[in-house]
Image 1: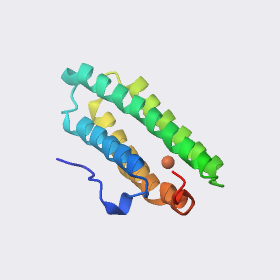
Image 2: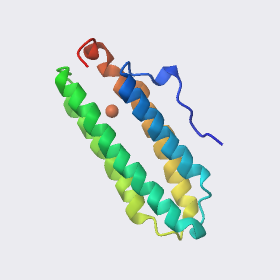
Image 3: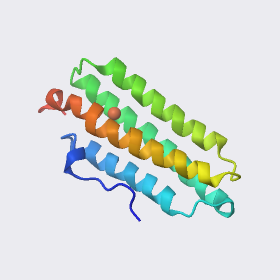
Image 4: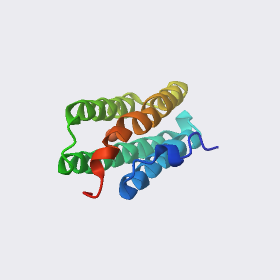
Amino acid sequence: MTYVAWDESMSVGVPVLDEEHRRLLDLFNGLLESGITPANREELSSLLASLQDYVAVHFAREEAMMERCGYPEMDGHLAAHRYFADEVEKLARDFDGDNPTMLRVDLILLLKDWFVEHIQQTDSLYKPYVGEKV
Ligand SMILES: [Fe+2]
């Protein structure tokens, strides 16, 4: 089951960033599909580590792009990225395989309430500044 599929409403107008957003959604979907049980602990830990790594790579690229384009609202955007990266880190740290139900709930909240909303609302604000400069 795909929990969230990328669609055009999530396009930020920068192909490489759209591609990374798709990949992040895939990682979330993969985690949620992987059968969150204590028996799966090792696989889940490695999937969470991949998510963490890819979030870091993606945010760094997006932040560099905003900087290049002279996007004026970077401070708030950077704070939002730090919040999300901290939440994913906390999730990975706290996960000990004993409470897989909570991991699922936290992941769904983070995916739907934060990540998708961030792409559609916060990321879309830099669209007018990107123009030809990417
Ligand atoms: Fe962002």
